[in-house]
Length: 129
Image (cartoon, rainbow, N blue to C red; front, side, top):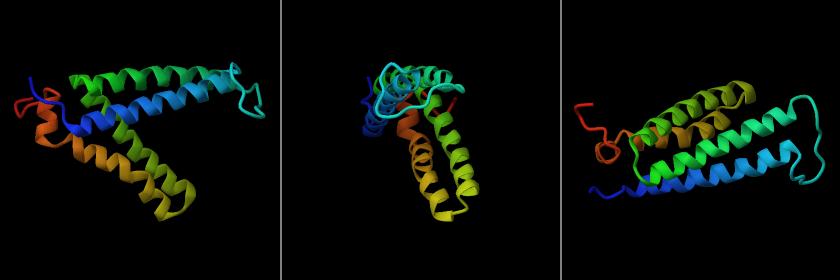
């Protein structure tokens, strides 16, 4: 059995924290928990339900990163690619190069890390695949 890379454990913790924050956002948007003034209507409930579903996916991904499941590597790659797309939208929307670069740093680090040979091997992606 190969040892879990330290970065995989870090990704697991980040995914778990991300999932837990989505729980709070989802509960607030669905009206179950209210943290201050909240506007209801106009699709807020749907966004809350979506946030809860995303939370479930993040928590599942965190356990998959921890257990170095092969599908967790793919999830990490997809999320990082979407993060880069989001960074481009931040760059265009904010009109600030600094904001775009700041939004792109973490996805670039994740993409770089997941492409390392020892990480690919730990997740079951060898040179042949």
